[in-house]
Image (cartoon, rainbow, N blue to C red; front, side, top):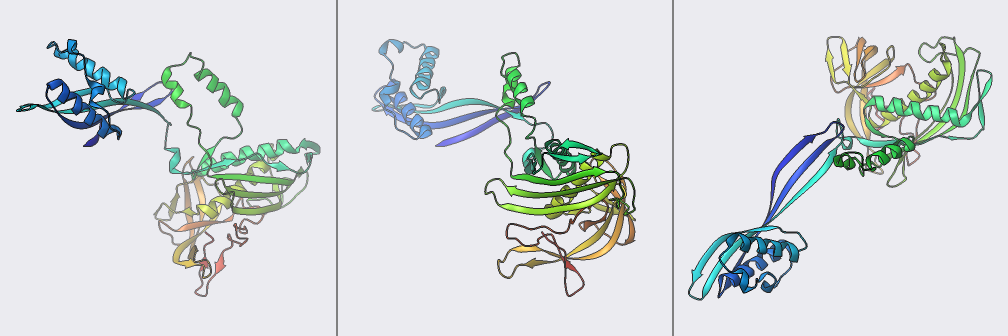
Amino acid sequence: MKKIIFAFTLFVSLLNAEVITKTNVSTANGEGYGASYDEALSKALADAVGRMNGVKLSASTFMLTSSIQDGKDRDFEKIYSDQISKQTGGRFDSYEVLKNVRTPDGYNVAVEIKKTSVSKKYKTPGLDPNNRRRLAVMPGYVSDFSFEVNGEYKSSIRVADDITRSLVTAITKTRKFTVLDRENGDAYYREKAVLSSGNAEKEELLKLGNVLGADYLLVFDLEEFSLSEGKASTITTGKAGGKKASARIHYRVLAMATRQVKFSNDIAASFSVKGDHAYALAVQDIAKAVTDEIIASIYPLKISSVSGDEILIAQNLRQGDVYEVYSLGQTVIDPYTKEVVGKEETMTAKAEVTRVTPKMSYLKLVSGSAKAGDICRLVQGSNIGSPKVGTDAGGREDNVVKQTAGGGVVLPF
């Protein structure tokens, strides 16, 4: 018989790390017969070790010399335990005699051998990163050496890097992905060197070897970008004002394991930005437009709760944006591939974002009614370009809302 006993789990809190210490006790029973107690015990131990290890061992492995059999039980058992550990590569460390019966032909002995092992594992602070899909934003590709920004030429690589960082910020704020860093390798290796230097606590080394791999890669090509004096429709109000920004970006979401293109789209737009930091605002608006499309395709906004005319959504949105609210209908199945392509939806309300927190947003109903579980689609705000057109791996326009005969539409996910 073989059994595993999980004795206990101890949580040890350190200043800069949380370590889970687990003690595991493995046991196996064996029985042996012999003309002497020593012979019966050796056969019982060999039987137990074979059961636990899945191999047969000779009883002579555990036989002691006659000089040890002098009645000193403590030494007797210690030497047997040492023999077990030595002969089995340290995989077992002690034993207990369960039965010692004198028979007409000698002895019948039953034993239980034990192996105690201790393992430690570093626990990442906060929520388990494996509860969400893991995404890495890769550095963008550029086709030109520089872009014109405020009458000067700015490195295109620098602009692409700024968009990459804004994408990381915008996607992290959605709290829908575990966003992985692929930019700060130097800082990581410097800290790794500190932990490996011998000057840190041993438990700190448990932080190493836990780097996560991505489920999805977000890659993009920045084909055009400019910022100049001029007027174009602003993103949020549709009125002319501020500096004129133009951008053309092509992005793709790739499945890391298969290199399948899960989502792809082009955004080309001219828009206005206001304020002393027009360049930073333009970069942020482009990143938010890409983020909104990805989230709408994979995780459409869902209403968490409704209280009176106030809607609560568990995501950080932008104050002033307006959303259409849709109730879900029947599941739609592609008649050719038999895949679920979405659900029918019927618009029931409009709502405007009135206040936000880092993790939640509150919307006020402008018209209609809404309930928990309904989805929301952005209709006015940071949706530059063509946020409702995208293609999946099969080349279909999988982010297009389609009308149905009953007056509803089919969701594109």
